[in-house]
Amino acid sequence: MKSSFLLVILPVIIGGLLFANSALTDLVYDSSKSYSAGDAVIPSSSDFTLYTAKITVPAGSNGPPHSTYWQTTEDNSTQLQSTYSSTVSTPPSSANINTSEIAGLSTPPATGTTTPSAQILGISIRGGVFGSVMSGSLTLGGTSEAKNVLFRVKGPSMNFGGSKLANPTIKALSKASGSWQTLFEANDFGDHSSAASYSDRGTGNALEPIAVIAATPGTFSCQMNAEDGGTGNANMEIKGFEDENSSTYFQGISMRGYIGDYPMSGSLTIVGTGSVDVMFRVKGPSMNFGGEKLADPKIKLLQKVNGTWTTLVDSSSFGDHSSSTTYADRATGNSLEPMVVLSLQAGTYSCQASSDVDGGKGNANMEIKLVE
Image 1 (cartoon, rainbow, N blue to C red):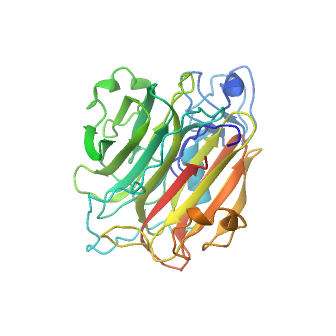
Image 2 (cartoon, one colour; image 1 turned 120 degrees about the vertical axis):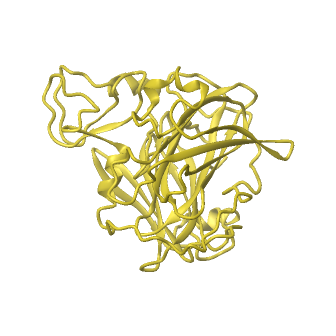
Image 3 (cartoon, rainbow, N blue to C red; image 1 turned 135 degrees about the vertical axis):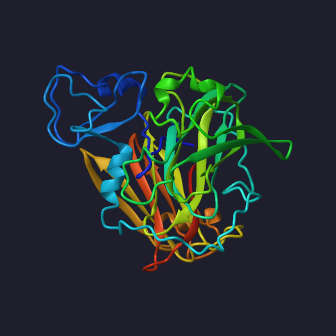
């Protein structure tokens, strides 16, 4: 297809961003410079967490994560959610856990053989854990070269006004010969052997686990739950490393979580040259899932330009967007479930899934995939 790409994600717009390799140095915080509100930086060439200035930042020792001046992409998403109620209601207790259902993985796409010139560096999605685990899938394309992938979960450390998952856990699995095999389970920071080597990637909260694994092309699942049986919103981040040159790349990510008074929110950053076609799709009623399903989902896509979020698409049902005709084969078959394909250039994007009906609640699956 066109040129290539890398994806990243964010927690309340859910968390991450894709940075063009050639521009990475320009994003590193420079203490000799002052910054204006909305300017974006990363702390260093080894820490690609994106921060934006909340106010004018004078030159000096005022770099991120200085909370007076800076907020992460996670914090930015909180601002975008300001129109929503600050109280997250508790869904019906009948919403059961269905561990056999892995969101978006019924037919894993074939792995590619050509590495895109622009790729998904990472992605993060914030959703609710209320009676059912937050479950996601990751597909890596390429040949056979390993790629280091960071899995990280945030709950109590999120800058978020709603109910937060106090003690999150993460479990990752890989699919081999048609069977799912557990790669790791981590309840707290330090549970996985990689934590010591990547301690700079930790959130600073000992209850929030991280793990870094060397993954080759294939299909993976990641599940987020509460160690103590609690409920609340949490953010799952899956990221590559900006200084790594691997032919293996992110083909797509999907995540299923509970949507209550807050939407499911994610972020995507694209780096590289040219453009790439990306599909955004939300499933609700068509999911093969035993818990409560969002009956009428909608999706909203935004792009950040010069520090300001601009809406690209608002879609409530299949057919709302012009791309639905060209990519009709990508539809779920349920007219209430929107699907949008956009040709995107390097930049920062946000996607939000919510109910098209006032007060609608339930689980939904958000999918972000390269169209290859």
